[in-house]
Structures are given as structure tokens and as C-alpha cells.
Image (cartoon, rainbow, N blue to C red; front, side, top):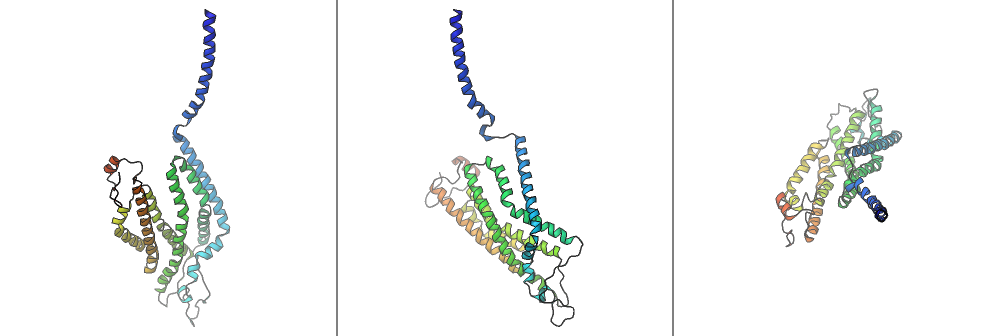
Length: 318
């Protein structure tokens, strides 16, 4: 009796043990990292490692930028050197002691001025040339928490942020010549300008950053529309205010007070904003045809948040 009871128990126990071991293998894998979540300390360690790698590649890029700073400096000072000699150096024909027409000089007022300018330009060059690497570190940290749709939006942002910034920098390069001509042409003939390299580089970097960042505004509007936060109806109703704010920002933000620089910033930005509005119209029309203008939200939630449910081409959002 005892043997008969023990043997089936042993066999069943062995069978049950095998079944349990087979069942435990996938179960422990699911429990280790459910929903691909990480503890807070793991996030902090991951962020620390990503930041360290980003700073490392920026440092390496800055070291490289230290050795290629000279052609970059010539490129930045190009708008200043293109000015007529009368405006640039106070050159007057027949005036004793006047600068020669071919001269293009910037001055320093301190012993370490150009050293710090050289270092600043090297860091800026390092940030620019290492941008793909440190942006990848940012992407690698953020991507695991994004859905596939949000990742596509990120690809769109990364693919357009540099072309738009470069376009803004191109307009800034032309605006700098106009702004410098306006500012220096105001000087009376008895005043000879001596522009410090610190002042000029600060002006050039400010122009490039302001124009480059301003040209990113349409991309922000496109991303907000893709996320369902900003619809075409709201853009259309606030078009006049947006255009006014763009011109007001251009008038205040440009370091040069001349109207040419303001228009070179405001007019392209308005054109890009109109392009973003056209994209929002096409995107909202596509969503409405599919019956989903706010994906992931029910009709009650849309009504609770006060979102737009207007008719588009005779169809209403459900």
C-alpha cells in the first residue's frame, strides 16, 4: 500500500516538477521587467551614462574644433569684411592715417580676449560636428519609453531640425551684412570704428542662434498637430495673432535695429508658419476621413477636454 502510494506520488511529483520548471522559465522572464519598465535608480544610471558619453563626444569635437577654428573665424567675419572700406575701417581718400581699402581688422582690448574667443568657437564647432552622436545618446535614452507612432514623430523632428536651423543660419548670414552696414553707416565721418572681436563674435553668434531657433517654430507646430494638441481650426482662427507675434519677435530679438534684418527673419518665418498650417489642414482632413481626429480619446473625453469636433467636408468626428 505504501509502495503503491509512494511510486505514483514520486512519478507525479517528478512530472509535476518538470511541468513547474517549464512553466517557471517564461514566468520569471515576464516578472523581471514587466512592460519594459526600469527602476528609478536604473533610469538615473542610464541618464548618467548617456550624458557622460554625450559630453565625451562634444569634448572630442571641441578638440577638433580648436584646430579648424581659423577657417570658421574667416567665414564668420565674412559679412564684416564685405562691407565697403569707408564703412568698415573709416577709410577716407586723402585722409592721413586712414586705413587702406583692403584692410579688414577687428581689435582686442585684453590680453586673453582672443584666447577665450578661440575657445568659445572651438566648443561651438564641437557641439555642431558631434551633434549626430550626442543626439543619438538622447534618442537612445528616450526611445524605449515611446510608442511606435511617437518614434516616427521623433524621426521627423530629427530629420528636419538641422535643415531648418541651417536655413535660418543662411538668412542670418545675409542679415548680418545689412545690419552691420546700417549700424556702422550711422557713424559720422570724424569717427573711425574699432570693433572688438569679442563684440563682433557675440553679435554673430546671437544672430545665428536667433534665426536658427526661430526657423524651428513651424516644426513645433507640426508636432503639436500630429499629437492632436493643435488643430487646423485653432491655427486658422489665430493666424493674424501668430503673424503679429512673429513680426513682434523679429523686431525685438534681432540684435540689429534695421528693418531689413527684421524682415529677413519675419517673412520666411511667416511663410514656414503658413506651410505648417497647410500641413495641419491636410493632416486633420485625413484623420477626419478615417473618423479619428484624436486617436486614443473617446467621444466623452473629447467633449470633456473641449476639443474641436467641427464638420470637415460634410463628415463629423465620432
